[in-house]
Image (cartoon, rainbow, N blue to C red; front, side, top):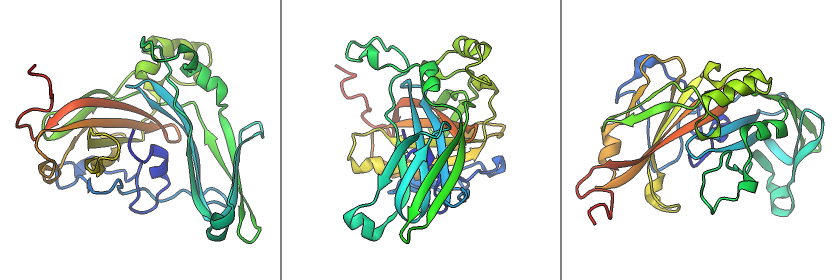
Length: 304
């Protein structure tokens, strides 16, 4: 996934990432794209007030390529000393208290990303099948409905906010490609390794899902182009990332040539495209093994 998660970007009101400036399809082309080099941020949409909080959100996020699924939440407020989250049954699922130095300086944004267990059997003996959480099992675990955020300010004031978790999960983008200048993709019909189109048909028939993912409206597409390097490599901070409107006709984004030119020769890169919809639920698809500024090749041992 992107260094800052999809949900974190949704919470940024200024130049802070995983998300959102919904751009018109008329803005396509290199002059309209946003290159993010040296930082992991992009233009974000204005915060959505959440009662007493500046922002609160709960979402489902799926990586359709890796086949994993997670529950993410975020709450943002001023000078907080305590934060808790309750599920639709009123049960507390998270609590955080500021102590010692943090109590003196307070909390503001609190973002939590659950572990993301595999939702399918990869066949790899190193993967414990007992740890697999299928889509249906995940949905049984996380009840849709109203999640309540509670907080306490530095002067003892109590804050409350509510947000909705839905089972409206957009289908995974398909057909990712890169022709050297443009990233392209197509509308998908399934959730990749987490669920086939037929399996999703069954979940809809059985009443587990209210809507088939291929029928969920995509509000925005998130597109990321980044060097595929080890964690900690400074090159990993050189990213191009942008959001475009979900209803764009031609699903393609031009990567600025200046950004590509600044990458070293033989840079191995990857692409990630996310479909965002259903109260900001997100499904991402990845494409690997892209060689940028190829001179000797990015394969390493390919010639052996």
